[in-house]
Length: 262
Image (cartoon, rainbow, N blue to C red; front, top):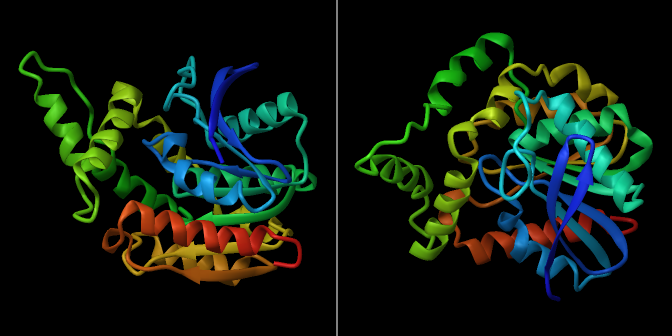
């Protein structure tokens, strides 16, 4: 089914999102520093299975407005609620990965009545020392240079999966450059966020997703232990699959979990 694009006005700015299908509402949040483009393949597959799929660009990423100041995870979660208000949606099935796993958990814990099922793909459940240690490693500044060397920095960041085509790497590179000098804002929100206290508050059925090469594998075990109604899915190593293979796997797993009785 065709994936369409539109903007919504929210109190924090215009949010760009993609949508497809009709049925059970599913919200797919992208990883940082990507955009909702990441989920187009999954959206096409899920929208054929009686799901209404919505994938927003996080503020500051993709085509959504850049925030006026550094967002917290709570700010991102509040903006998700504002978007759902505009769309008139409740009882959604919600997916988030890495940065947006924190956003999804915050939203689900604070507005549980709005989330029917929750999927967390790599959860940044990190103590303060670990968050501080990761901060400098993951978010080097993107500085513009007259010789265009910042473009090479963006390419090297995107070209991490040998199974990806050059066209797919280029698309990831464009997403990174769209986020630009503020690409780090989602990460900075994670470094300032303690996700652990939210885990026992996630009372809805929850699916914890990981892969053998996920750098957050230790945190995954905490999610399994501390979320009351939690099951897991361990996928193939992330960098062993093509984009199409990964999309097919994710659509199958989420489709089964988000279906009634799943």
